[in-house]
Amino acid sequence: MPELMQFLLSGVTVGAVYALVALGFTIIYNASDVVNFAQGEFVMLGGMITVFAFKAGLPLPLAALIAVAVTAAIGVALNKLAIEPARGAPVVSLIIITIGASIFIRGVTQLVFDKQLHRFPAFSGDDPIRVLGATILPQSLWVIAGALAVFVGLWLFFTRTLMGKAILATSNNRLAAQLVGINTAWVMTLSFAMSAGIGALAGVLVTPITLVSYDVGIALALKGFAAAMLGGMGNPKGALVGGILLGLLEALTAGYISSQYKDAAAFIVILAVLFAMPQGLFGKKSTDRV
Amino acid sequence: MLTVEGLRSRYGRIEVLHGIDLAVNSGEIVTVVGANGAGKTTLLRCISGVQPVTGGAITFRGDVITTVPGFKRLRRGLAQSPEGRQIFTNLTVEENLRLGAFLFSDDRVDRDMEDAFQMFPILKQKRNQAAGGLSGGQQQMLAIARALMGRPSCLLLDEPSMGLAPILVQQIFDVVSGLKKLDVTVLLVEQNAFGALKIADRGYVMETGRISMEGPAAELIADPRIREAYLGI
Ligand SMILES: Nc1ncnc2c1ncn2[C@@H]1O[C@H](COP(=O)(O)OP(=O)(O)OP(=O)(O)O)[C@@H](O)[C@H]1O
Ligand SMILES: [Mg+2]
Image (cartoon, rainbow over the protein chains, first blue to last red):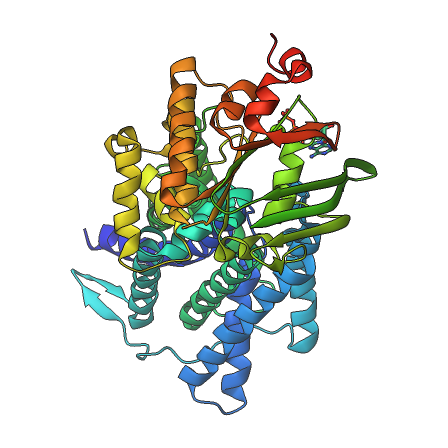
């Protein structure tokens, strides 16, 4: 029993990380139908910038804040320099551009910072908390709380605010969005800033557990992408549930079968789900009709 | 209220508007009729600022707006219900209407929405359904209602009767002629020349990117050339 509890706790922790990455995908996807594969680099940047700002002597909260702000600015630059000039290109080309951008960001990070693994202190110490015979790190609770907070924030943003609706409207029909007075270029800027900021926040929260180096982004982007597909791309609820499910699947497979099989098991389940429900668990069916 | 002078526009290297002159006075319903491919939609897209203009000028309520970006033109009172309706299919009927009033967040938004529901009661019934699931006629109503939510002083309508059953066509034309009472000036583009000229004050006939005839709607309906070419009589 304590064994199962331990697997569940570590699964939820890893799942919350995936959920945070997946949540970052939703905004840009909702605004433009683009799956931004540089999302993992935003997570990495959040961690790396915090590490170096903290090393330079800034207090940790300030270092984290700077990391989120700088990463958001990098997100905006990505949109202005790489996505916007390719306006009108097919979505697949835009996705390939984001893959290129992620390679570029990784390279520059390696030059500006270094290739080492880094960490900064956990927010509330490293003493494990006992839960029903198992243990969980205080930082894991931070990660889980962060994922929940971002989820609630995004959910409210997309369902309750006019600006959130304007983002959905822009991706649904850009021409009509302009005709009702929405500045669609600004919607894109905002989306990239928000997605990058959320990615950086994820990096800040997980670095004390997983450590960070210039190349951690790719794996995170892939797992976050898998989680988002599982839950239904574009839906915050899907990102949260998809992330947690993926984390649990991996932890249980690793625990009861073998850690060698954890990725394979997760992907088999995802493929099975997508086979039965191509839109993911919470994906919206497109209701276009001519 | 709206003046277009020598307007030219092109898609790539092909010019499709070769110098259009047209004027709409405050309170009028003016229609532009013309065959398939004449350039009517391109003209409205230029006026709304979502299509590059290569020559000429557009003046609206005294200001030259030729280079004002599209998203800023509704602020000046110029709305469009575009060809093909272009509703937000993934959002609900009510969300579509709310976005029509994207520029506003005052009490009038709710009142305008009630007015829209009064104008088109079927939309009220379906207010919480995805707009993509509406029938063609209902989508057209939604497109017009959404444009009116933006509080326009001038409404550009692109083929509102396209693809609708005859009974709905009449209902839509009735709504358009009723816009006069709401102090909304109308520029109506139609292939259904007869229906449009019947409710319009004045009309323009457009042929391959040029205005070929203009005049009071009643005169155009009576003109033998128009009867033959566009009314099939
Ligand atoms: N996106 C486009 N790219 C290239 N050419 C276009 C494009 N849209 C329209 N055209 C061309 O421009 C000309 C005018 O088209 P437009 O759609 O303005 O005509 P229209 O009068 O609205 O026709 P309809 O009554 O069929 O709506 C046509 O010859 C058309 O083929
Ligand atoms: Mg047309």
